[in-house]
Image (cartoon, rainbow, N blue to C red):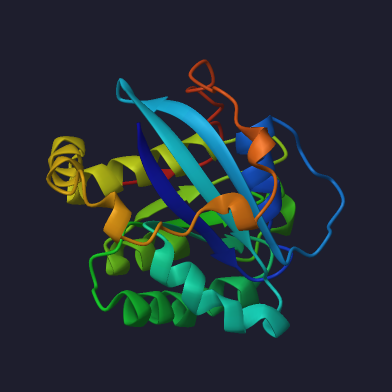
Length: 220
């Protein structure tokens, strides 16, 4: 089974943890508790393929930015989250994306721009078209989501899996692993989530593919 390392990034309070926990556990976290680093594993089926997602929910506060380079280096796909109720959280993502491209040393990185809290329409300050335009300029997918109402939550992670597969097809990945068989004793093990608890959260969400897309938009 292929594994996918997905990193969730954005300013503090935009709902990174709420989106991640909603996807992994099907729960909405009402209370805001600043994250340092949480790792989750979840098995899902995407386009008929079983996938193991390792999702890293990162800190949004400035004091933990020194840890970001490691996240970015090891991540295969990135969720960049802002709140539609806070313009500054949207602005922060431009520099964040530039840092990812610099660390990865390529402009072709699986990435999705997410405008969270679309259930708070009365408090909106960042228009849908603004997010759409930025994503179009980046060549990325765009989604507006609500962790609270579970709008487009699954779609975030399924879209990233598809982007990763498009750049590195599953069959090619299997062949590559086959060529390296027998060399394991001479190679260093990759970074695993053993350092980051919560592995016990692995579940099967093959019956959760559909979610309520009402009131939000998807730009591919």
